[in-house]
Picture 1 (tube, rainbow, N blue to C red):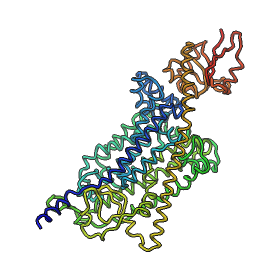
Picture 2: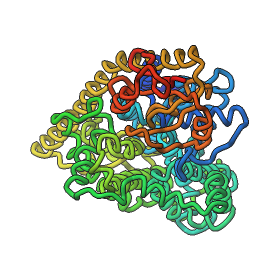
Picture 3: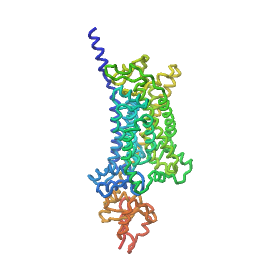
Picture 4: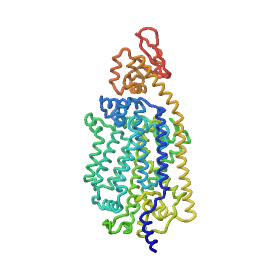
Length: 628
């Protein structure tokens, strides 16, 4: 009798967490490292191929590293901030200019994106296996996705990790601090619902400031993320509106002004409108039929943006994701909305600690798990609304109709909504194929009998994190044979879609790997071009747009280039100082890719006499030197 009495409380107070719960976290770590290793291998093979736009960001980093300038915008335009240049500048100062050095910060941003996506999935109520699935989907990458993540061409690599960080901060501010004691979370939610200032609001001021800072940096880096900022901001306004009136609102506004300071100061000084510049650059003022826009935006856009297409194109069979994406977007939104609208259960005195802890729930307080479930649903709905707005804005632009394959980079931010988008699939798969055995009916205080790992008796849902159990829908499903068959059929269909996603993404990633040797060979030819120009003593050249700044950055500005078109007329110079230097040099050379229209035009000027050109051939390139 005495032994039994002593063992029971020991078992109740010191439960053992099953070791199997650590397996998905370990697998997610391995999968994440594989995704990072895959991208690092591509970088070492000079893939994805660089271009003059990325070199322009590299030149900005070079100027910052030398202290020669601190640009606010991508050279030659009044939008797209130079955050990537500031991140790369210390490495450029240490190791000199190179594409690899320029891309190491973007690789780090991708690693941060994976880690934050795991954390966001867990905070939104997903269990570790679902978080593993999200990481696996994001670890894959077609050429279009890898370009968006790794090329330091401005605006794209930083959007996804910052967007996920913004969603995490929103969950934290609305649902409480992870690991906080249950009564504090419940009291905070009850206080917010009653309009009073939530306990511990002062301790959340750094997070409010962080939310504003991240939002400001995002708006400066690229306004494409604006729909997500507005949608997540709406969640904050609904859940914490009373806090926003006080110091929390001031902290958020201060962070926002600090993050957007470069953009705001430049706009005030020069009267520039970054949003109008973005709309013009996206093709809003160009002609494209609505049929072309709808096809490029809704049919080609989602598969390209999510990494389900072959390098540079979408095969017919890879377009299956387009209708699936739209159905999932709608289904996930409906699911989140229904969860959000579900009434809060009455407070259960057995859910809270005893009076010995001096933490008494107030009348009308809802259980913390129900409150966090509603917050999770609201954040998922905000992510889906942001994704829908981005897709709609892209489809309405002429860029979707004119250049859908290249312009699909504007949809790269859809990856931020991956945990919310895949939620219905995971829920259906778990309910249909891996249902958890139902326990005895709940009674008052039953939730208090859960163990420390969060495995509540009788719960059927997905999350294994304390306070984020998703009760419910499985308990209300019909137990008839027909009902079970429908649930199982839905689970099989969900697993098929998930397998199709992973399989299609793997095929597209394999295509990107197969293209790496050709990209590496082209990069070697370009390095030979730079070396040959140095050996010839050439310091100024004229070349096409996609040659000029790439050549200048690769040479560390030892060679300066002015842009010309195929008719030898002056083109668009992002740094006008280069043209002035080239025009002042009577011995300036010409550079053109072998077989290009520009090379054909210059071949006509070859000859032995004064005023003609002589040619030096490099594999893949031609250098034309003036005769004197």
